[in-house]
Length: 458
Ligand code: BG6
Image (cartoon, rainbow, N blue to C red; front, side):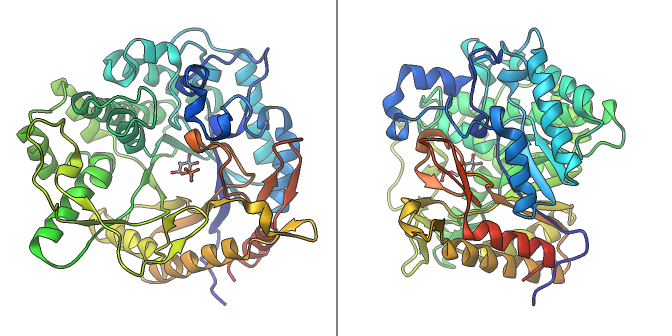
């Protein structure tokens, strides 16, 4: 039996844009996903857009009961900026205030710890039209939005989160064309990354001003970068990949400053962002209270095979090639590598290099395409998911035994939810969602997760 420390948190994460859905009179404004879906629905899997999702906006009371039925002692969701302030920077939507208050009170009434994220890839479209995160005014608008949230819900939220995986909109929006504005513009991407970090640090400051005992963190996807071999060129590739992928937000958020080597690399490409002298002081003085870590798969890299084309736009990957390790273990239903030891390695890195700051594993999970094929006797028999969770928990447990300061495990996710361009392709939930009639059914993993939580281990 593997037993976790007393008061270890067991639960799951979701986000507003992926679960709430929309009603015609709910007062929500468009975010970039709403807009993009209207423009280019063919980009979204099966043309299922963000307005549908799992209708949490209407069914939250019943859905919160599923949290209890699946053993949650913690739950993480996000406020949609475009629901709270439809144009991003103007009037507050009273219906949104009432909705989130009801949801948050419902979570607390069930004895569940509440983590609330302010931003899960969902910029209000009105702000995107003015340049989005490239434009410094978005930082000011975000700070105002964050302060409104702290004032409205600070009495009831246990832990705040400034951003979820902030590197993802940078990579996907300005390099790989998978998030709006879907451009290839490295200069803009680096400006967006800097403004996002500044906004996060300003939110930390505002949070502590509103409530000196409020706790606020950031959620980062900290996949370690594993080199193909110990050859110096492979090691260098891994170090640089990690600088861009993880340390670009980890260091300023936890240590208050950017790694020197990253700054030098960006300078060498003449891509330093515009900033004001005081910004660096704001970042220095407003580090997070704790970290959220999302981990799904490792990043494996090798030295590049080819020299970069000097005329091509800059990509961080001019310094590394992605590498498929022979014999890697795969999740065949999603196409991602499974490497449980990544959790242990992240824990060790945080312990050794980031002051052993308190952290929570805020996302881990197994996406499965075509999951209905695993239904037997009316229930999805997702033993693969139970094994996936157990295998990762073994590594986490080992790290905690060795002193890692991890306070909880949150699975992605509790009810199958909508996911950006992949829509409902990959199912991750403890609870199955039938898109046709919006009915919910607990999967085998949901029942098992309750036992896991009750036993505080397995
Ligand atoms: C995480 C994101 O990185 O991956 C979630 O924070 C997302 O928002 C999840 O839903 C799963 O992604 P996908 O592409 O497998 O559906």
